[in-house]
Image (cartoon, rainbow, N blue to C red; front, side, top):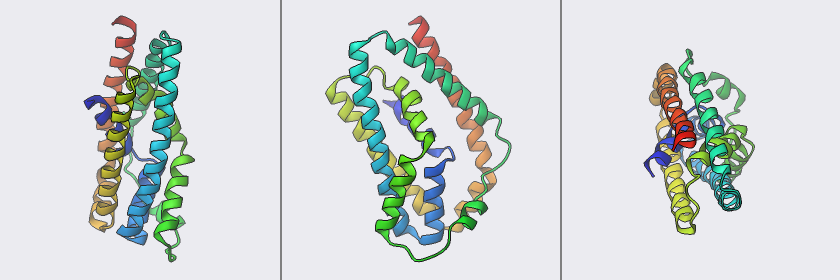
Length: 206
């Protein structure tokens, strides 16, 4: 389970539409609206996770050899993503996101719907669940295991993005992240490179 926790945590930490939407909403519209935006994103994550795990379980029971192919593809993509992150040299810039967002009145329900739409239309999460997480979850096929992993992902996603909303409702944390985000990318990239190589090795030689 630790590999699932770490991979999912690093995936959420890497800059993307979900991350920046929560950070921007917290900075512009306050903590309450950001927390409701988190609920929308969590709903989207659970949709993708459920679709991946239920479809993957059926596919692996029908074609067991697909596990090897899946792990090689997932490991390769993870190494590609890791290489890109290791080579990041610039920090995150929130100015463009803030300039695009008009500080107009909003409601928690609107932010929840926007959060869901941001997640469902995010190509990053589609690739993430269809390749990386599919490879990590390839050995989980029993019903109780699937339910346990879905619960784990649900709790981890809520805790991370709610914490993010609380942190980025203060300007000091946002400034700190903008200054040091590339180092987080570099560290995450190293982990992705190593874990991707491990998945390929496990698929071919175990």
